[in-house]
Each structure stands twice: as structure tokens, then as C-alpha cells.
Length: 220
Image 1: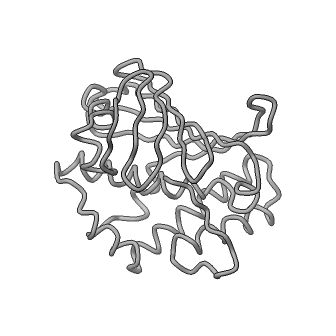
Image 2: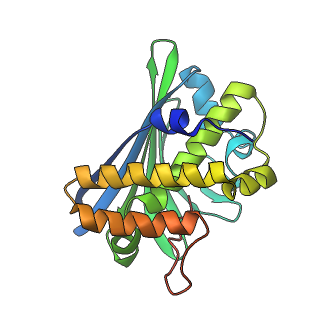
């Protein structure tokens, strides 16, 4: 499996914002990028039970408003909004915690723009790992989506796992983590603090996490 790391990561615009949700401090990571397909096709790829496993993970449940879903070995939750073919939102329940995802699609000339926002309450997990804890996982997922849309071939999960341990896979993780560090700094966080958090997250995804540090447990 080969990926042009710089090109794929460079197609994504990343941002981090801070606000209050239900009276608690919260932060959201946002990724946006264009795909070389139409909105209807992109909607089907990111919401269809038959197509989601081709680029992400097997999924079970009722993929409709109010339905419960479960990604194999990963997050589950409830679909809280669904307006085909441009918008859906859901809870993201993983490792005993709940966060929230929102996906918006828009036509842009002959392409489709995808915007994904993942919101989490600021607690120990965020303070230890920062936005890269979910951001790196979503960068990987969006890269898989591009590969699937471009080739029509489903992701080979065993090959993808092996690729993660390769020099190219580790370079992808490092560059993604550094991009999220930059977005974190741009949101107003102290650069030294942002680097501490991104270094921890990069080390986890690269398989170099010291045993005395808890893992990000992002689910993405």
C-alpha cells in the first residue's frame, strides 16, 4: 500500500475551536477537504451500510435518524440528525466516554466538499493528548475514503495495519500530528503545551508510547 503522504495530508484543512457545551468547556476539531465525486455519491459512501466498511470499518445497527450504530471494535452511538444528502450528526461513544460528530457535504463545481467536526468535553484525556487524539485517526479515515473513491477497491485492513508500522505509515502519523499541533497553536493554546500533547499522541500512533502513559483511546 502506497500513499503520497504530503499530498493526501495537504488536501485537508484543519482547525480547532474552544467553547462551552452544556455548561462545560469543550473543544472541536474540524477537517474539511474536496473529493473528486458528486455529493450524492459521497453521501452514499459515508452513510451506506454496504460502503462504509470498504473504506472505514464494518458497521451494524440502524443507520437512520434515532437509530443506534456500532462500528466493529470501535465507537457506537445514536444518530441525532440526518438530512440527506448534506448533513448527519451522531454521538460517538467509546471507552466509557461520549463525544459528538457532525458531517456536512456540499457541492463545489464538479466535486464534493466534506466537513467533519468532532466535539469533546475538555477533561484529562484532552489535556493529555490534545486534538491529534481524534485528528490523526480522522486523517487516516479520510485518506482511506479518498483511496476507495479513486480506485473502487475496498481497504485491506490487514495491509493497512501493516502499513501503519512501516516508515511511510509512521511518517503519515508524524505529519498529521504536527499539522494538528499547528492547528492547536492557532486556536490560542501555548505552543509548548501543544507540542507536549502532540508528541504523546504521535508516539501512541507510531507504537512508541512509554508504558507509564495512558493511551489516547480516541476510537477514531
